[in-house]
Amino acid sequence: MKYFFTVLILLATGHVSSAQTTEDSVKATINNLFKGMIESDSALLKSAFTENPVMQGFGRNKEGKTLIETESIEEFASFIGKEPKGAAEERIKYDVIRIDGPLAMVWASYEFYYKGKFSHCGVDAFMLVRLNHEWKIQYLIDTRRRSGCK
Image: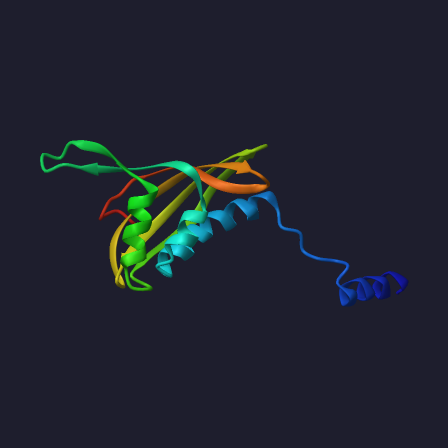
C-alpha cells in the first residue's frame, strides 16, 4: 500500500514521465517529413533533413529500363510547398529500425496518395545521422510501384 501511494504522488506531481526512446526520436524525425508533406510546409519538411541530403528513387523509362532518379531537397520542398494542404499524403509502416550510436537505418513500407487518390506504393529506406543531439535524414531512397501493394 505504501508503494501504491508513492507511485500516485510521483504521477500526480509529474516526477514520472514516459521517456522517449531512441527509436521514438528516429520515428519523430521521419514523421516530421510526412507532416510537412501533408501540411504543405516546406520548412517543416526540410527540418527533417541534413544540409546536403541525398534523395533518390527507382523509376522506369519508356522502354521499361530501371533508372535511379535523384532529386534535391530544394526541388522536393518547393514542389510540396506549392501543393494544397492534404494533397501529398504518404502512409508508412515502420518495418525495421536499426540504430548504432549516431547512425540509424529505417525500412518502411508505404502507400502514397495524391489529392485523396492512391498513386503508388513501395518501400522507403532511410539513413539518419544524429547531429547536435537531433536525428536528421541524410539519405532516402525508395521503390515505387502501382500494383502489388497490399
